[in-house]
Length: 498
Ligand code: C2O
Ligand code: CU
Image: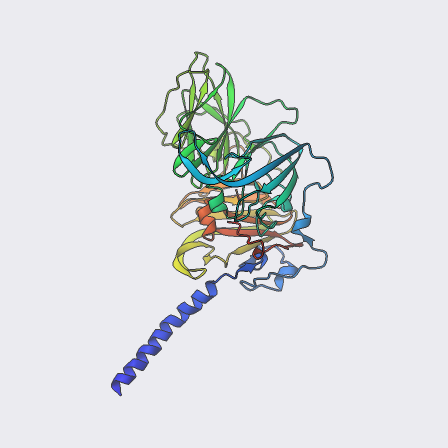
């Protein structure tokens, strides 16, 4: 009798302990297919609600709200459909092995036979048409135009702005290159693996009159542990005449932060994330951080004396100067350039002090289940994927966002479709040139405040560009009221954006 009592108490205790765990486990399971509009919960940031969303104030109503009369659908938010393109290219994706110049074999992906894919270089204002063909990538592919604020349907996010392009199929992107600058493109289907293994390239938009400064594109990518610049392993050389100034367009396509610094000359930072810095001054003995996904344009001056300049890019370097000229090396500077105080202030075109919505994007780690897997996972605003915020805005809103990182690891935060201006870093207000960003490194323990104008209607993802982190659930979304979502994650197209 006694023994039986004890057994019963034991069972009751076990159930009492396990039942909540089982409930948490079950609540974490993500269905095979869902609309991102039904994932998580809407956050109106102190602005008016959305009649279309208010029906589901609850977490995880997987189908999302039904389209309302008068809504515009994501797939109608395209670039110009009928005009003749100024630039038309076909990019054909293959799954194949390729060899780096130093002999290493990479089992990856190519576009038109190479990785990186071909550089796309257009004049500002041109209509660009890209025909993406999937010849042999089994999981399907897309192309996202990273840093180009394209219309939503051209944004290339599988399951959010289009279906993944299956083997044997193709998809056409059309957009006007409205802003000059250094950008890149990459697959946004199974992105954490496809980008790392080669499905990307650069996009450079130059002034409409075609008058460009001499430039060199330096795309930093690590293939299976081998650092490369533009797909070239080992020290990369580019010739440039003595005395000339060169714009080095650094693109970080890796998952981690890189730092760039220059030996043999001072330099200036001309642009960050495709936006010019106002009145950039010369700097020396300082490194400039380049967030994952981010771009930094440096101006270096080739010396008159026949020597060369070396741009250190993380573990590798780029030598610029007359053929066979020697370049010095420099130890990595401890100091990082503070972009908050670099250059001189100028108009940003809106008043961040009069925001219509204010959002929090607080990043931490919490124990729990992620799609049934126990662990300590990335959390946003105290919750785990998929219970993440859908930031809701209306077109024309001035939006502030405070990004706070107490997760113990750095996160390069990337909001699609918009550029934001940095207002403050750890409470220190910006005093330099407007610092526009689309890929902002938020290091462990840091807090940034940013602001932007909601001027590009659609459904946009807002995620960490350490793509493994994104695949592990660091993804929020920004939704405009009056926009409906026809695509689904999973489903027949097997959409898997991260
Ligand atoms: Cu460069 Cu969501 O991506
Ligand atoms: Cu991250």
